Length: 133
Image (cartoon, rainbow, N blue to C red; front, side, top):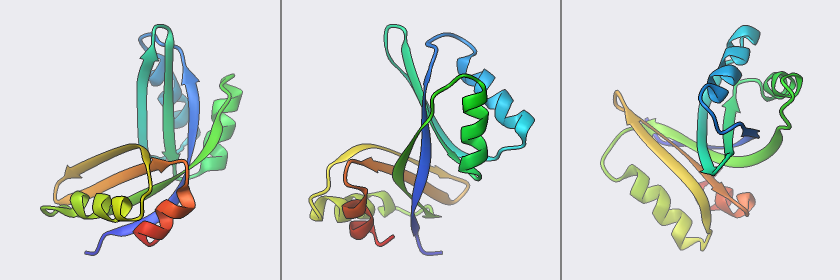
């Protein structure tokens, strides 16, 4: 399988930097029947945390977050997935570097023979052009 690359929309929300904050959000997603394809959450400093969600239904996920009193923002990112093989991430990063695109954040995973990564950049259009999405 070739590596498939596409532009995605993610939801970004501030979280309380305390135990259970992310669990509350995921419980609300579960209750609403929302499939979350990927997420990232982290503490940003004392008392500050945030999460990013790539949902199968962005509109529905945004509505759930809003009803919870969160203030989600929409952000563009690039998602790639395919077979997990040696060097696949290096190849993608090489294309981005060759295009001169500065990545703000990225995560990559290989599980059960499959590979997935997400790239965040200020210039998503240039990132898409570099990666072919």
